[in-house]
Amino acid sequence: MGMMSLAMTRRMNTDKSALVIVAHPDDEVLWAGGTILARPNWDWHVVAMCRASDPDRAPRFRRVLEQLGADGGIADLDDGPEQIPLEHEQLEHALASLVPDRLFDVVLTHGPKGEYTRHRRHEEVCRTVTKSWHAGDIRARELWLFSFEDGSRAYLPRADATAPIQEPIIAENWRTKLRLMTQSYGFGADSWEARTTPHVEAFRSFEDSREALDWVIEQQSELDA
Image (tube, rainbow, N blue to C red; front, side, top):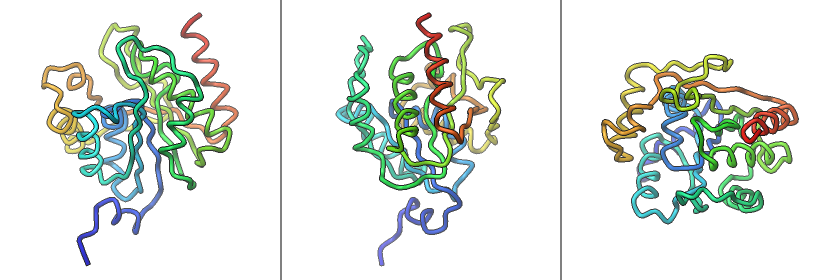
């Protein structure tokens, strides 16, 4: 018998199953890497919505998943600098092609206002995931939304102190997280990404999909007000 992958070993002896849905390869490490590393017995499945055709980022994403012991996939939605709004159907179709048809204990994704000021794709992914969960297209018992803020660009993104779930990252896992950002993804030691890499990850959780969707819509309505 050949050697089993770390992801396969986890699935055979797992505590919970978790689905992480992010806009870009590296978001899974930046905003939830410590949470993933702190739960090595969970069955992790990670999907990114952009950059499948990126000859640099896509293979790095796959190598990072191997290092995290996670399964996953990547789509190729537009991620140009113009950040032209995407139709909901585009996001929904890409998401459907990536998400396994099974029940997860928890799904983690971007917050309604993104993690910093501001990135349209983060906001769109949040809205699409929440709508898909409410519609039953994503099956999960619970939704966790990343909760970070940057004071309207006053400082680097950091965990929102008002979020009910606060996940301090132990030193060893934070060093691994930083290594994944700098060595595996290739961001420089002085890059925005490396300087941002949070020591605490924060989330808002929902068990009621209607409550989650109403909250996301309310929060996003404030963005363009």
